[in-house]
Length: 401
Image (cartoon, rainbow, N blue to C red; front, top):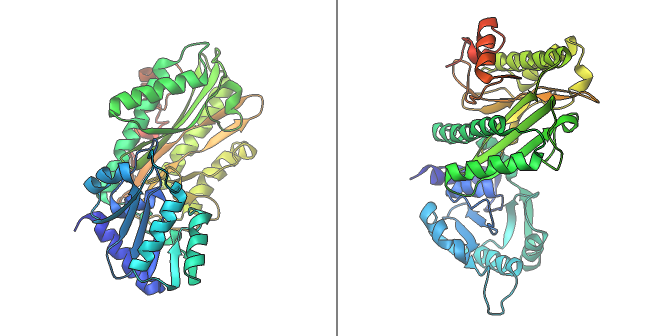
């Protein structure tokens, strides 16, 4: 029994306790989590996973994805629909709805509760089910899977490390490619092209990439803005490899930083280190947020830090646990989180730094590796930070492995 089948059996136990005879899974990350089939990030068609409480699941995929699904999944009962044909057939949505109804009949689900992912299911599917099975009522099941995903297995942590390694490569390419007059989208395109050549396949690269005044709001999608001397460059880049995401942010100055810019950068850097130092099993997410936020407030920049202190990463690049003031979740060994403080000042620019960290039995382990240098030649900055003990990345951290 592989890990995907084991997870499915755990889900079926939870279904039994919740009184759910069947669930309908529609989120791609949850389908991968339970089946092992990770659809391509480019041009993938809808996949549906139907899991009964006491029988093996049924998967619905497009005809051209059937071979790939059979190679990756432990699930044997796979139904297909026609994505492309020269013959006249019902539309994709109608075909999938008909297959769902047929599967529910096969599984003898005609009444009772049906678990669904209420924010990730087509209205057409729920309406088709209501019309065919009026005695069925819907219950949200997404939160059950989200809770299962919050602590990662060793294999998942290794997969995330690989994705984070690609994030490090993003940051390296970004720094090496900066040229005065280039646009944000030019830089992003260079980064994505280089990563896909390295990976040997199409991959997802998302996040913020902005120059100059674009950093004032905390980031945005890359656009036409041109790079000018002494601009801030913010690269908050998320990469998905084999279903798992990494997420790192660096901010540098393209040229010579002013004393004020250096001061703000140092506050963000120290806030980052405070957040990292706080990570250990048992600490509440809200406490980490408080330590970081209180430090930024103490330096007079509280009004310029308006977002979360961090978040989980895994099958998505933004997931539980959220490192925010209201989250009382205690960190556990095996969670993978980011810490990403930032300061964004109108008419001056914004700085954000973000690291990816695994919660370990002893404390934490940073898995993002690229330099946090702000200006100038990276190695010189790294040596200065090690000497002055400013940056925890390059110093001995208690509890790190």
